[in-house]
Length: 413
Image 1 (cartoon, rainbow, N blue to C red):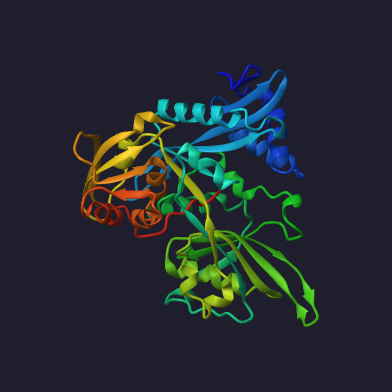
Image 2: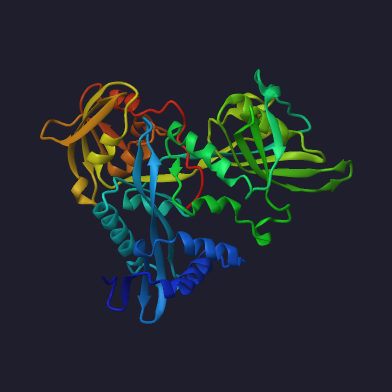
C-alpha cells in the first residue's frame, strides 16, 4: 500500500526494530533513552501489528497497535486495539503517511474482531478526524503536606504498611491490579510483559529524584494495596523542602488505600506530594482537609474509537433501560454508518441495524467519547455535536450511558 508514488507502508520486521525505534524516539524529542527502555519496547511490540512507512530506504513513519482487553461499563473486558508508536518524519508531513497508517490499523482491528480502538494523543487535534473521541480524563495535584491533613476511615490503623523492593513484590501488586480490573471502565488487562513497564527506571527519567521505591499495604498478612513513588530532597531558606512523586497506587479496600496515602503524606523531610495521572474521582480528595491547597488539575487522557458500532454497544451494560435508534456518521469507517437500534439495561444489551426512525444523530467520534461513561451525550449536544431527533431520546441515552465511577486509563501504551 502506498501513500504517494514514493512511499510504501509495510509491516515491521524484527531486524528493522532499532531503526524504527530510533525514528520514533527522534519524533518525540530525541531525549536520552536507556537500553532497558528499548528492550522493554522490543519485548512488547507486536511485529505483525506494527508498521513502517518507507521512502526508498528511508523510514518516514511509524505506527502500531497492541492487543489489549479493556474494561467497559458493566465489567466486561473487551478486545481493544491500543494504537501507539505513531510518528511521521517532519520531512514527510501532509503526504498521507498518517492517514495510510490509521487506515491499516483500523482495518486490521476490524479483521481481528476488536470492537474498540484506544490511544493517548500527544496532539489531541489530530485524531478526531479518524473517529477518536476524548473519553477519559486524569487528575494531577501538588499537595502541600505541611498544611493539608488526612482524615482516614475506620480500620486504617489495622493496615500494615511496609517497604518492599518493587521487583520483589511485582506478582502481589499485579494480583491487586487484576482484582481491580472489572471495577472501573478503561482499565486494561495487561498483556504478558506489560507488568514490567512500571518497573523500568532509567536514571535519565528520574529528573533528579530517587530510584523507584515501593510500599505494600497488608491486611491479615495479605497484600491489599501498593504504592510506587520517588523522593527528591530539597532545601530552602526555612529548611527541608523535599518532594514525593506518586507513580502508581492501588488498593482493594478504603482502609488500605487510606493507609498508603497516609504513609505518602508523612515521609520525613518531604513537604510536597505530587500526584499524576489519577482517576478524576480518586478517593484521596475526600480524605484531605483542604482540597484547594492540593491544586487539583484535570486534563484529557484516553481517546476511544468504536471499530464496530454494533459489537461495541452490545458489549457494555447501561445504567438505566434504554431503547434508542442512533443515526451514526462515520466517513473513515463507512461500515459503521447508518441507523442502529440499541436496547439494553444493567443486565445486558443488543445493538442491531434498523430502518426505524432515529432518535439521536451523532458521529462515531461522539460515540467514542461517551462510550465509557465519562462524557455525557447531553454535554456533547450542548456543544452542537449531538442532535436529538425524537423527543426524550437524548436524555434517555445520555443517562443510560453513564458510569457509576469515572473511566480511567491506568497507564500509557
